[in-house]
Length: 120
Image (spheres, rainbow, N blue to C red):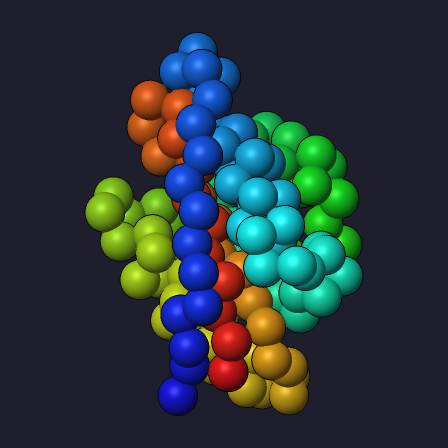
């Protein structure tokens, strides 16, 4: 069983669509008095390789904690099912690794980004 702890939605100008997670993740961590080091696994949607790379670098995510089973570039990017796919990947991986805390994050059209904190 997992707990959906919190979520944040952040916005950036629509002409830089895709980088919303770079703003949503830090806000989520701040609101929950956590640092990126407190997160065991990050499931970051890879809508585009450049978008994902920007977000990883901006937030400072350790690549060893990033999409350990692959992301949207590997699995595909089914419209409207990103969050479900991320949760379905995150939960068994947290359990397999014996870890507790994960973040799922995605960009959303028109410049929004979302991030959710999940705990086992």
